[in-house]
Length: 267
Image (cartoon, rainbow, N blue to C red; front, side, top):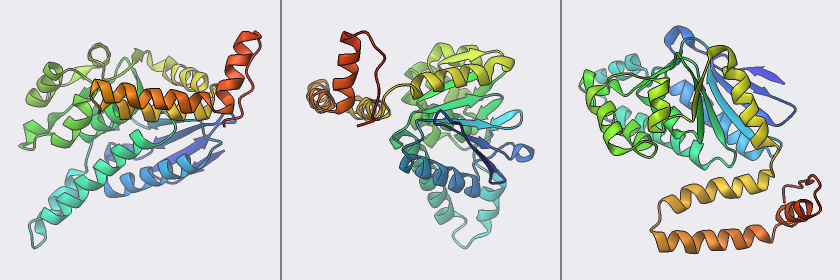
């Protein structure tokens, strides 16, 4: 099934994989108000659809996303408050989008083929997994414009170590896909011709698992990461106990013991 919503293309496979493809290449796929709104709608709809097991976020053109629409930002300076209320609303809205990716029950995979800068880089860092073409590049170049990439920094510093994050933030320089993999911004870099195949292979592998179990695991992963060691173990012990009481855990263990494929019920 394929649905073209102009700046966002939605495609769902028969294996439960939803592709959300940003489709505004002439403007470098900016995270404009309209793009962020339609992405949020797509993610919310997907989260409520239990037939969707994995979400892939991709883009048409040679720029994955250039970040915020600077023309929208500049035009807001004509407002009576010089754009202050608009700027606050814009960054709050973007922050909500990034958190929605993390809180959506399905794993979200970024399929990057091109340049991802500023909030576009933040978008990649916010996804659970990311695979990029060898030609892809990443940057947080706000410092070059007199505007530090403070909100992209939140996602960036939760993926890469502090020294590498600070270098990207302070210099605004691009890093290539191999470097992005080395510092943990993406999972892997592959040839352009193999990108779709590799992302789809990963998505199908995840989609073959119990959706209920994957959802429990994703939520627990992010929750425990914000806790101290003792609290994290208490939380995940309770999570595993509750998980074991689910049908799919019983089915999976029995299937393993009896050496047969499991039949997931997602409950």
